[in-house]
Every structure is written in C-alpha cells, then in structure tokens.
Image 1: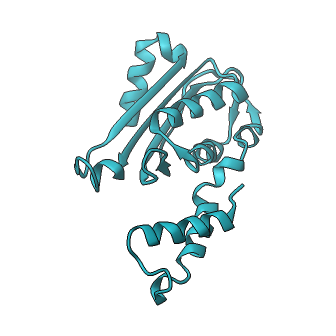
Image 2 (image 1 turned 120 degrees about the horizontal axis):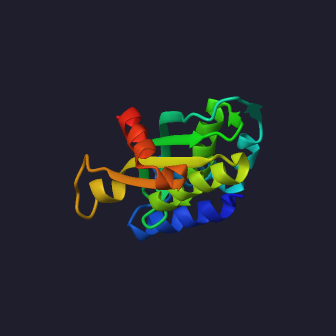
Image 3 (image 1 turned 30 degrees about the vertical axis):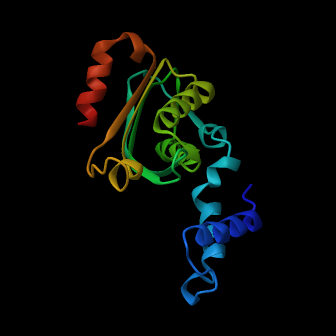
Length: 184
C-alpha cells in the first residue's frame, strides 16, 4: 500500500535536492500529484494476479492460444524511469482457458510494480503455470526503456526483448517458431 505522506515528503526533499523552490506556484501541489500517481502506477503491488486467472472455461482442444500486443507501462526499479511496450502470451491449454482480457489484466498486475523486464516476463509465465496449469506457456516482452533512451547511452528506439518458455514450448521448437510467426 502506498504511503502518500512519505511520498509527499520525499518529493519535497527531491525537489529541494535538485535546487528547486518547493514553494514556487507550479510546484506547490506536485508532491500530492506524485503521491496520487504512485497509487496508480504502483497499484499492482497490492493486487494478486490469481484473481484474474481464476475464472476458467472448459475446452475440448489443446491447441495454442495467443494473446499478442498487450500494451503495458512499468517503472524500472533501478532508475524509477518508465519502460513500456508489448507483451505476447501463448499457452497450450490442458482442458481449460481463461478469458482473453484476463491475460491483459495479469500483465497489468505485474507491470504496475517497480520492476525489471526479465522478472516481469517470468512472473507472467509463473502466474499462468500456477493458476491455469497449461501444457506449455511462452511469454515474450518487447519494451523501450527510458533509462536507456533519455539518459545514459541515449539510444531512442532501441528495444529489449525477453522470452520465457515453459512446458511444451521449452522443448518444441516448431511450437516456438509458430509463436514467433504469429507474433510478427
């Protein structure tokens, strides 16, 4: 749970630390705005992803299901700068599927935390395995990191891609290739 008072105090100190006048008209409400923003962008800290994956439906086939281009925004835990992009989730059901919006909600839960992309990718796959028990899962996350594009090396447009395979996807290259061809 976000402690708004601590965030407001920290923002005031931060602004003073960079040489700003915290009593300047444009900054008077900034600490409160930042605290409210933190409730939104770090809201996944208090949310359990299993809630979204608990509503399941029986199916007869065990063919791959792919939800691609799930847009997300997250905050790099190293610099507290945004990274954003698309997540692609595929799974081979074992008699059960979830609603497609539930996959997007699962991505949101993990993206709305101080995060690194590699962990985000694994946490999505872990949640799928834990709550849906599919025969296989593959998650690919493509993101642009503002800690690389607006500071440091300053390479706008560069993307980081992370992939996690589990179950059938880990051992079946043909299934992996089908995933990649469908994502592109």
